[in-house]
Length: 207
Image 1: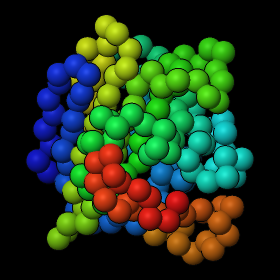
Image 2: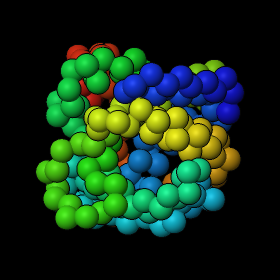
Image 3: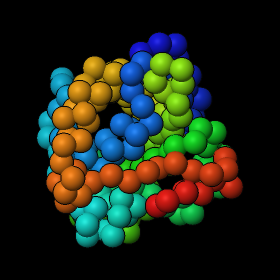
Image 4: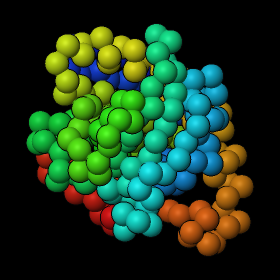
C-alpha cells in the first residue's frame, strides 16, 4: 500500500490508499464474500464473522447485515452489527464524499450487539470507494460518526482500517483467484458496486 494518509476532524476521518495488483473486480467480490477472508483482513484484531441477515435473505447485498467481533488498538472488544446501505438511504452530505466509480457504504447499527433490529438507525458510517489505476486500484475509506462525543473514534478506526486496506494487497489477489473456479453463486456470489455519477448524484449501475 502506498501514500496512506489520514486526518481527523469530527465527524470525518479519511484514508487515501493505493493498492498494487488489486482490481476493482476483486474488491467487488470481497464485499459479498467477506466470510472467506475476514481473519486475513486483520489477523490480529478480527475475532470472527457471520452474516446476521444474509445476502440471499436481503435479496442482494444492500440491506444485508454482518456481525464482526473485533478488538481495536484501544483494547476494547466490540461486536458490531454492520448493515450495507442503499445510497438513497444515506444523507446527501455523506454521499457528497463519493468521487470514485465503485463504492460501498456500510452503517454500524450496534456496537456491542444489544437488542439489534434490522432497521436500527446508523451510529456511524464507513464509506469505501475505489477505481482502477495503472497497477491496481486507488481508493479512499472514510469514517463518519453520527454519535455525540465520538471525536476520537475516527482515529482509532483509522489505525485499524489502514492495516485492513494494506492486507487486501497481501491476500485478496490469491483468494479471489482461487474462488474463480466456482461458478455456483450461492458459494461465491458476485455483485458489481460500480456507480455512475458522483456525490449525491451517484447511482449503482447494476445493483
